[in-house]
Structures are given as C-alpha cells and as structure tokens.
Image (tube, rainbow, N blue to C red):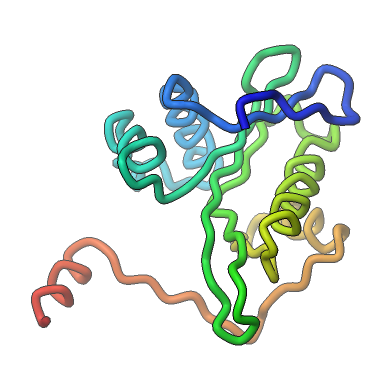
Length: 169
C-alpha cells in the first residue's frame, strides 16, 4: 500500500514504511529500546534494516504513524503460522508511540488496523509480547480484551549460544 491510511484521529495517518523511512525506523527503535531499558542490546543499523525490511527477501513489515505529517510511532510485524489453526498469524515485534503522543488513541488505532490487516490476510490471530514490568502496556492490552498467555514461557537463543547450537548440525 502506497497510500496513507486515514484514521478517526484528526491529523493521524498510518502508512506502510518505505526504504526511505529506514532512518526514522531506527530512531524509533532506539527510543523504544531506551524506554525498555534495553539500549545496550540495539545493534541494528540502517543497512541491516534496509536489507531485512526492503531487500530481496523482506522478513517483516512496518507501519509508520504520522501525526500532522511527522512520524511519531511505528509497529514492526511479520507473519507466523499456527499449526493448530492451519492458518497464518501476525506477530507484532514492536509497537511504539512517542511519550508526548500517548493517550490519544494512537496505539489502539494501530492495533485496530493490524487486526483489520490480519482479517484481510485470513490470519487466525494477532500476537505480541509485553515486558512484565510495563504496567501501562499491560493495562492497555487488558482493556482491549487481549488475553495474557500466562501458561506459555518464551525461550530465546541468541549470540554465542545461537552460534554454538548452529555448529552442532
């Protein structure tokens, strides 16, 4: 989609990011990491994002939220697959709104659009993770009717552990 997506919030549009947005995407990722106290983990570069998001084989998509034509938030997402449902899903890796624009309904608008996109793409679910200390986000998602998957534990292998495991094959 190359057209901005109109919203009910005056002055707010959503749009799919282009390669020209890579500097903005990285800036927003760094702001999110700072908010989550994880700045030390950001190793992404503009080149990496350009290749991963807009290269030969894009692995994720990005929605940019513009307020009065200025980028103030984003969501990065990709498709996963449910073997139980036999259908794809959308996994939201990140959703971030600049602090001065929170409380305006922008986060709900982005999630509503992603839910619409999931329905259009015949997805069976929309999923994401939230840090357990982020009470504002937890309350927001609970108010939307999202269901916490408390019985599931997220596992991750990265860095040297990933390299070591891949060497076992």
